[in-house]
Length: 241
Image (cartoon, rainbow, N blue to C red; front, side, top):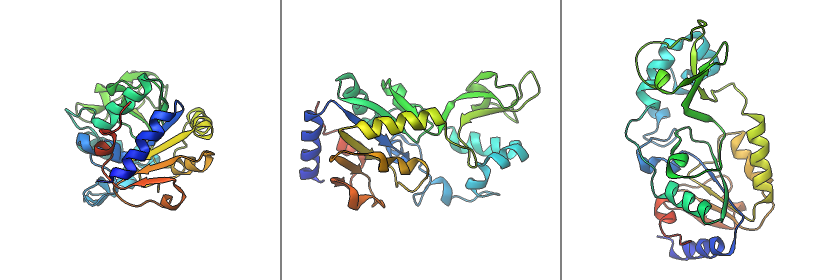
C-alpha cells in the first residue's frame, strides 16, 4: 500500500473544498461489475460479434434482437451495491468538499451511494426511451423480459446510454469542462484514460493537484502531481473527511 501517497491525498482533501472526481469502470469493479478492457473484461469474452460492434448505434438499429440478448446478459448485473469508493465520494460531497462526480459508468451506483451532483458522460442503464418518439420508459422494460421492447408508437425502446458512433451530450460535456477547469483538486480514478472524448477532459485541468488512482499505468501518469497504483476502494477507504 502506498502509505505516503495516501497521506498526501488526505492532506489535499482536508485542505480543499473544490474537489472534482472523474471516474471510470474501475470504480465499480469492486461492486462486482466487470470492466471492459481488463483481462477478464467484456472485450475479452467471445461473442458472435465483437462487443464494440454490438454496442454501436448502427448495430442496434440493424440487429436490436442480438443487442438486447447481449444487454441483458452482460450489462444488467443484479444485486450490485455501491462500494467504498462510491460511499466516500458521497461523504465528501456531503461534507462540502466535492463539487461533482463525472463518470463514464452507466450503473447509477454513485447516485445510489448518495451523490447528488453526478454527470453521466455515457448515460445510464437505469433510464430508457423510445428511439422514435422519445417517450420515456422505466428501466425494467429494457433490463428484464425477452425480445425487443417496443413503444406504443411502434418504435424500438432503447437504453439512455451513449452507444459507439453517437456523440456525448453537449451540455454534460460543457459542464464537465467547466468543473474540471475550475477545480482545485482533480482526482481521476478507475480509468485507463484511453476512451475519447471523455479522456480528453483531463486536458482542461489548470490546477497543480492532479491525482491519478488506478491499478495500472495510464498515458497521463507523467502529467499527474500524485499517482497511486492501488485499488480505488482501498485508497478511498483511508481518506478521512
